[in-house]
Amino acid sequence: MSGSLNFVRSGLTPTTDGQEELMGPVEVGRILGVKPQVVVNWIREGRAHPSAVDGIGRNRFTTEDVARLRAGLGQRRSRTARTGSAQDGTEEGGNAGQGG
Image (cartoon, rainbow, N blue to C red; front, side, top):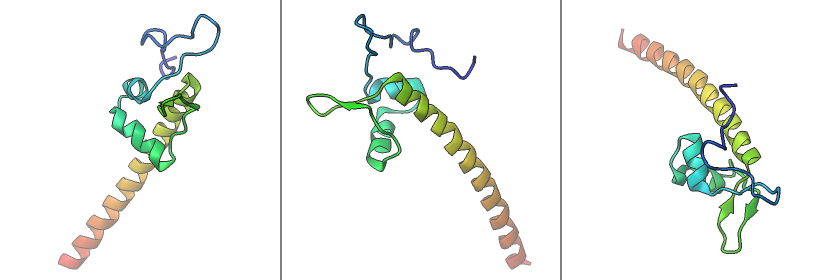
């Protein structure tokens, strides 16, 4: 499966007691190919929802959280691409009509 997340290879494996290891914005950003600050911005904007906050206030994500973020990223990118191309075509047509 090419779209699956490979947490074992990235060193993010479940802990020995059966509970999943939680990740911070740095690890999440590395998996998703974005800077950690982008992940922090998503949290502030309400686009990302960590499963936990540790004792000193750091946001922590599960592998399921990251999978949801990745799925949402694909939807946002495709929506942006469709919307952007439609807007570009409209703007070009509008400018050409005004110039002639």
